[in-house]
Image (cartoon, rainbow, N blue to C red):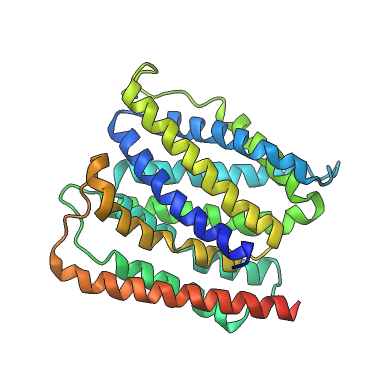
Length: 298
């Protein structure tokens, strides 16, 4: 299996672990600002070794990684906020809308010809994600607000993905990605814990925060590197959308160990989730087929 397929799929699995850990961190008292700052600092450390991949430092294009970092940080901040106020099983599928957004932006901004297989996979991914999470929300969950915030996060990440594919050409992955994450860490410096955040000495909140930040950084380096190196943002996002399936499985299998009880849904919703899983698998197969055609076309 080629690396442009393996990397997004691996990132999807690691993302689910990050989401569960960060959700647990918020429930332990960690605030949005503290989480975002920690995640960006850890990500900057993880991305730094990519410098060995080499590249260029275009003197007049420093604004490009700066803008990309701003979009990345905004998407991350909104994702953490959505996880704080809502469920993992709501936030994750809404983020799946990014698949369609990336396909549209790739076509418009990059003037890239996408095959029918890629377009079909993008829309099937969104349908599959919706079916996976077709269930009544838990009592007290703020579904509407969660959907809005997660949708904004998806939009930020979609534009970020496409711009990384576009701008990393001049820089090279070994320069653009570390510099970009350096900007993201720099932007996070002013973030300060808000009233009600867990104090720095809170061992429980700190442990879950670090675990979530490490997993989030790892999935980011897997996913973003696949875009910067192979320049197939639309295909990568379809494969990455499998996190909707993994999130369901993770909540059912290990969620209770992490204090997450979102899996308590009625048996009647099982059929919807089986349909969603099947649709998502078909979408991934379409993406792999579509990416093979893109390679032939190029």
